Length: 343
Image 1 (tube, one colour):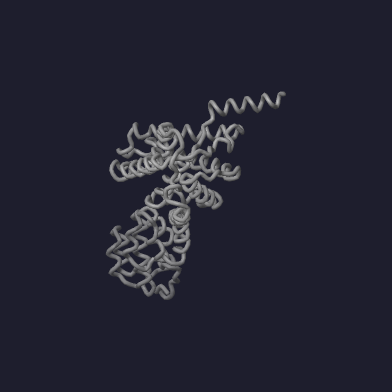
Image 2: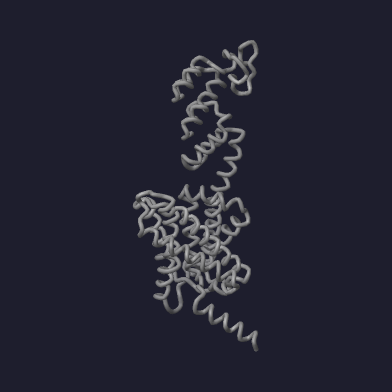
């Protein structure tokens, strides 16, 4: 009897306080993830940290595909799929909550971040904490993943809303990506769910309109899009690793900061003085130009060195292979001072 009462207490608590996740929510959240992974370089760079745990990336890809595809059909999800979806929702909310936290005003004083825009990340952070506590307390289970159906009109309105939020937030308001992502998630979990109540009766499913043959093509397209989006992160990791042997791979880095980090970490491989300009730190940039001048034995490159003293010493070929030296300390690139000449 006690066990029955305990189960019933949990069920009552779940029905009143524990959030449920409809197919519409999963679809819109996955659509948001897909849009950011395909079109936002800053998100791709941030996602590299998640990519260190390749198991999570696989879960993200599989659940993203299943979330979008299941929204188009009425095929029920099994217990294993629902458990994966639950992990997917919790990790994604937690990831965005952490990104929003470090993008907050106390860490970033950019003028475009307003108090109003921080409301959505704040709600997202609270949602992530709530989900974690409920999951840890064994209250949030796979039962929270619903097997409802989505009307094709509801599907179209939600898709258009997410795309519009992304376009206005990123390109018009120029708000940072964590806040825009949080706004999309807020719409998916709060506003989008409210609109779901407007669609009563038997919904018209997307699959019933396009037919089973076209659905197979659509599924293949969804898989390709997710592979392309997540694949950009994998490619950046591979390119950064390859840059340790060939500096030319740094050109594939998605933004200036990652390019600078790549060139700075592998500046010993640089043989083109123009590439040194990608290094933001002036000291390292001058050092890079001097190293290139030494490798090419070309004093004309010394003109790129901003520090006047280093520029003058470089012009005298001080320390270059074949240049004059007083000791091994004056030679660069592991050369030795032999008979006052770097060799």
